[in-house]
Image 1 (cartoon, helix red, strand yellow):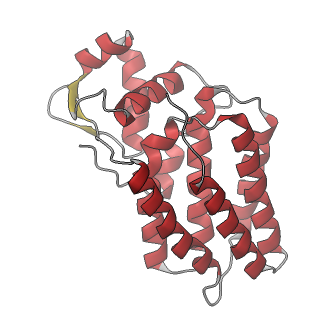
Image 2 (tube, rainbow, N blue to C red):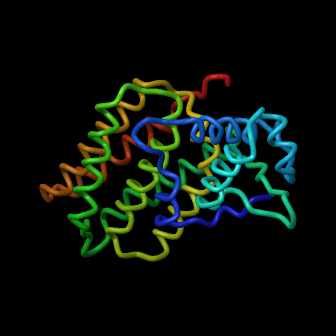
Length: 228
């Protein structure tokens, strides 16, 4: 299957433009089919073009975006390896329990400090997301922003093991979260909670921020995915 080994820099590579286009729609379709097991673990470009009724250039753009994020891998010739992600209910529950143990604890690490430039960029990204009407194609940008947020929070701890763990969790949930089914209200709630956590950290209320982060993760864990 695909090697899911991208870090924070690679995550930004597929952030879509302000207005979603056909490339994002195609990426979403591939992600949804991969999540639901409708795609084989190895597939040719010709088969993908037939399945999605797109030309070579359109497919190449979508595959390049997925490859840049490290969620697909080129095979010899014109073939691609596509992951068969196991992110079922049990895996998801285990993932959230793990994140609940790690992420709030990261904020309590000695010498915790956020990069102010990163925090400013995060605010701008979240406000932009909140200002735009929700469209399904924005799920890619939403997930990558979310991944950068949680990774950046943990990075402030300066603990390489915590950071590696959260990067692995982001890789695990990428395909599932590209296929967003929780609706626009959850987008607003998630972004608002992220901004509140940033507020508390920047005001020196790190313990309160850790509690808010825990509540944020608990709410996310309790969500029930709608059928695709």
